[in-house]
Image 1 (cartoon, rainbow, N blue to C red):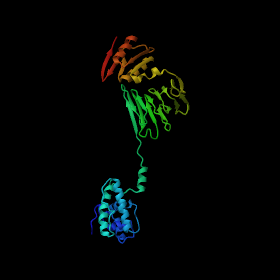
Image 2: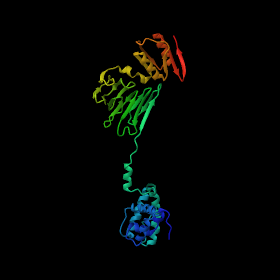
Image 3: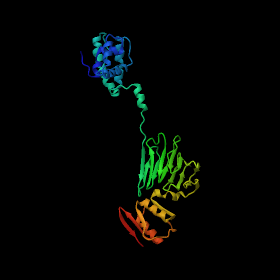
Image 4: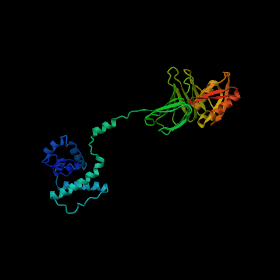
Length: 352
């Protein structure tokens, strides 16, 4: 008995081919028994797929059927730009000549098909099951420590400039099923237009929705969140059922949310509000506490006052790409107090 170890062995067997193309062939009982065996079942199914792919399952395996199968093989191999002998001349009706040529053709055909058959049989049911497999959704987090800023491009084409000591989170299906971002800290958003998926930013108890626009959100203090619109139009609403308020902003307008208080809309100066993106520190009548917090966040240091300035003091000033020491020297000289700050566990003193 012949040993069948490859798909090619079955394709070269006349009895096997006749059985595949004619289930009522004389050897059908034998092949049906072999097909259910563990050792040969997979190889048989692979070989059957190659033959049936020719779309020639005729009941009778006559000379005409043989000619049509060979023609099919010839056409498919030509598509692959492979050489095949010309069988159009003087093909005899004897089975011996036919099967020698058919075996050779089928072997070549097998090589051509093997790249997409991949030696595996996948039923439609299995394909459907694979389509139902869900890829787990994960969170992507972008975080900047104190003293660091960054700019990232989102999958939908939008851009986010993340300030120091700030974090944004979004899911791996962002841009496909949603455009939702969760913000802690401060970021500037340049939103790519998308009519089907609104762009939403969740910050504290606020939800800011936009389609194609640019805006800034500062949520360092959850009890004092500020949304400032640069271009386009956004809707800001609260997820607090006790407030249940929605406000639309236009360029130059800002919204302030103070804890459980209602949303308040006002005006702001766009030329000053977004200077932090360009490396410019701007203080406009800020308290000592706020001044200290901004410097610590901006430079990534811990700052302490050497002497005790008046708590009612308000500070103003503008600095562009300036060393911390220069900022402290200028402010200390102008307002009459000294600073101490720590970098990498090393303390520095700035005195008048």
